Structure formats: C-alpha cells, structure tokens
Image (tube, rainbow, N blue to C red; front, side, top):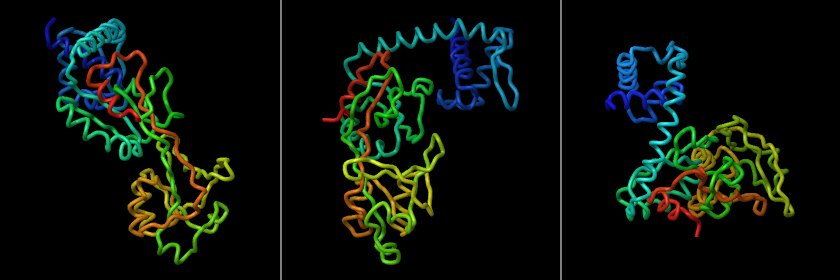
Amino acid sequence: MDRDIWSGLAAFAQIVEAGSFAGAAKRLGISASALSHAMRSLEARLDIRLLNRTTRSLAPTDAGQILLARLQPALASVEDVLGEMENLRTTPIGRIRVNTHKPAAAYVIMPKLSRFLRGNPDVLIELTVNDGLVDIVAERFDCGVRHDKALQADMISVRISDPLTLVFVAAPDYLDHHGSPDSPNDLAAHKCISYRHATSGAIHRWEFECDGERKQQAVPANFVTNDIEMMRDAAISGYGVCCLLMQQAAEHLQSGALVEVMQGFAPSLPPCHLYYPSKRQPTAAFTAFVDAMRSS
C-alpha cells in the first residue's frame, strides 16, 4: 500500500477518535496544519469526502463512517502485532505514557524514576499530571496512577505506595493572630485553605479521624485552588489553616515555617495504585517500569 495513503488512513482514524484536528495532532505529536494537509491529500487520492468540517464541529461523512468501520479493526490488529514484536525484545526500549495525579507524581513516582531511567536509558517516560479522572484507554495512556477508589473497571492494579499521611498546618504568624485550633469544631472560627476537585468542580470536604472513625466536614475557606503546591505556599504565607501531605509539609515543619495543629485528627489517604488494561500485552519496557514502581 502507498505509504502516504496508509499514514492518511491512520490520521483519519485519530481525527475522528479525538473529535478535532487539534486533539489528534497532540496525540500524534505533529502540527494541526500538517494533519489537515494529510487529510486533504487522502480525500483527494480517494476522490471522496470523508469528513464534514465546520468551525464548531467535525464528523465523518457516510463514506467516512463506512471506511472507519472497516479501518478500526485493521488498525487494532496492527497495534496488536506491534505489541507482540515489542514483547520479543529482551532489552527495555520505547515510550511509556503515564497519567497520574500530582501527589503520586511528586511523592511516589519521581523519587523512584531516576534509578529506573539510569538503568533503562532507551526508555522514554512521558508523565502527564492530571488531578481529574481520565479514561486512559481513550486517551491512549499506557497506565494511570490513582488511589484505589478511583480506578477504572477491568484494570490490572499494582500498589505502588503506602497510605499517604496528611497533616493540618498553619504559619506561625497566622496562629499568633488567630490562635491555634485544637479540634475540627474550632475551625468555624478560622480561615482555611481548600482544594477544588478537577473533575467535579466541588470544593473538597475536609476529613478527620475521631475516635477511630472518619468524618467529613465543610470548613470556612478564604482561599481555594486546584493545585496542592499552591495550597502549601498559601499556608506558608499565612492565609490560614491547611491540610497537606506530610511529604509536602515535612521540611517546612522542621524549619518552623509551618506548625502542626489539631494533632491526632489528621487521616491518611489510601495507597496509590498503578493500573492498566487487563487486555494489554506488556512490553519489556512496561514490565520493567511497573516493577520499578511496585511498592516493596
């Protein structure tokens, strides 16, 4: 088959799956203009229109739908064969696309990654940090990392961390002006730094451990962000009381920039799990990566 037609067919499938030229171009690592040129060339070679395009929408024509129905199984078969070829390699090589939330990226994956990359110089890790929920199959990630309660169905799951300890903190200057809360009930008289969830858009309800039971409670927030590092910086700047990962807060507690409050009430987050489709044929590179991330 003509190489240009084959590449055009693959591009066509990606465009329809992504729903836009920009989304498909991002997946393929090329410019949207180059992708548009490839699509025009394919339609010219086949002498038929495959896509209906407007400034606001994109959809396959009737001919495009017929082509896509026959094309997708063929492309899936090619990907399976390429995966089998990868499995025959004994030396890890290739790209691994990982989607993870920020706590796991910063405090679980990155500390283990340098040793893995030194031992596997032919492996490229593409780490996408996204605190929302992501369909890793649709977005063509090799694996995702989330807490166990947020895992997709039909996935193989590998635990890669212990539970993550949380701590309630505030800056000394804030405590000098507002006093120190000793229990969750005291927070009604305080200013708090809160987190907005990426997927739902809801403000996180704080959780507390009380007499062996966990309870949720809304707190009065005067600063809300969707970034855990900004929460830490806001706490150091004296904006209010904040709930952080112990890994985030440890050096600042040691330096005195932050002070722990409400000791004994902080819960822990569930362990992080790496997950991937059960039907996936792991390559040598992917198997090595999972082994490196696995919790000891």
